[in-house]
Structure formats: C-alpha cells, structure tokens
Length: 315
Image (cartoon, rainbow, N blue to C red; front, side, top):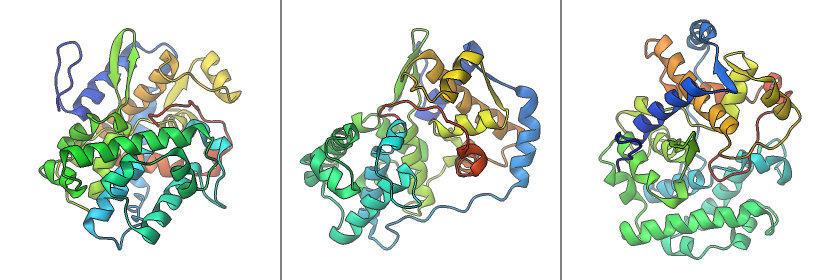
C-alpha cells in the first residue's frame, strides 16, 4: 500500500519518517535538544542491547504464532487506561494483556478467523481478566473482529498467508497491515495528516524478532510511536517540553489524542530516534533504539515520574 500526503508517496515507515521530521520542524511545545543527541547515542551504543523478547507462544505452530502476533499487536494500545485496569502481580498493563492472551492460546489454541469475527467485549474481558464494561474491552473486540474479517475475506482464513504476502519484507508487511482498520493510526497536525502506524510497524518487527519469518529491511522501520519513548527521552533530557505541557503531564492530566501537543510528543520522539540512529552511523536502527528506550522505561527513575497519557486506540 502507498500512502499519499500532499502528493508524496512511499512505504509506511518512509511516510512516518518524513511526517515526523516535518512536525519536529514546526513543533511549538516539544523540541529536540540536538546537542544532547550525539553523547546520548554514544551512551546507547555502549549499553548492552536488550535481548530479543521471547514469544509467549514459542512452542506453537507457525499459524498459531502468526495469529498470536497479529492479535496481540492489534490490541497493543490502551496505555492511557493502564491505571484503571486490573494488573497481574508484578505485571504492567501491557504484560497483563499479553499474559491473558497467551494463556488462552496455549489452553484452547488460536482463535480461527471466523471466531474472531464473532468476539464480544465479554469474550475479551474473560480472556484478559477485566471487567466487561471497561471501555477497552469493546475497543479490543472491535479491532479483533476486523482482523478476523480481513483474514477470512482476503487470506482464506489463513493467518500465515498475511506474512507470505509480504514477500519477506518488513516494509511490505507494515504497508499491508496499515490498510486495516485494526491498525489505523493517523493524526492531523496543522491541517496535514501525520501517519504513525505504531502497531503495523511493531507487528512487522515482531514477526522477524520472534523468528516467525526472517524479514529483510527491518532496519528501515521507524520507532514505534507511543507514550513511553517520549517519556524516557524527556527524563533523559533529549526532549524538552514547554512549561504548560510539563505541568499537564506532571499533574497527570490526560492529553487529548490528536492535539498538537500529543502529536508533537510522538513525532519528536520518532524523529529523535532517527537522529540517534544516524549518530551511531547506523550501528543501532531506530527500532533497536526504541527497544532499548522501552526497556529503560521500566526502571525506577522513569517510573517515579508521571508519563504522558492519552486514551486512544493508537498506543
């Protein structure tokens, strides 16, 4: 799929990269301290790279593993709601959702595409141990139904056929998934559409790093625009925020999804990882830097300060 904004075309990551660079150049509430980029990049290259994650369904067949990745990454959002959900002991909001889904797949097998099309909020709530009335449950059910409809209608019910259709390219897989409602993620800034497609890109990365398929060009994926990487970069002094935005975040106010400030946080974080990658001379890709920062965000230094939160279906 080719996205077109103001006459330009390109793969999803290329479009995300260009749009985020443009936002960073216009931003009013978030700036990148470019003097901090090179020393921060040096420190990143000197730090041990986080090991690849283990797929919770590592012993499943290929079809089940693809189904798990597509389902998990389709519902890889809700961070603005994490303070309101029931978390498992020692688990974050995301790992709570991941664990519930993995247990269901191990106990009963993967959902078929047809089963996905019939999911309800109650079904999802049961699987991940939440209240059926929580707003996330219907949102999760809705995107999973879309995944099922796509797999059933376009890939004869075969999850693995989605990966096969990418032709071994992470960029092609991200492009393909970005066309699904389940992976939609485009904001608007100063009248221009700004594509982020966090979940479409992370699904492509997951297919590769979980060993489901070896995809070329993963180094051309961008960072996966969420709220944690901007938080880490802010705490570490790479991103600087104006006083009003700092006060809102520190006061734990919810940011409006699609507001200029929220778009700037995501876009400037993506662009900062591009600058950091360039400063390592490509030793670390943007996606690798994203993984390092995401893991860093679990540390006490970062957890001790409020992070930006927004309730949306993007991240």
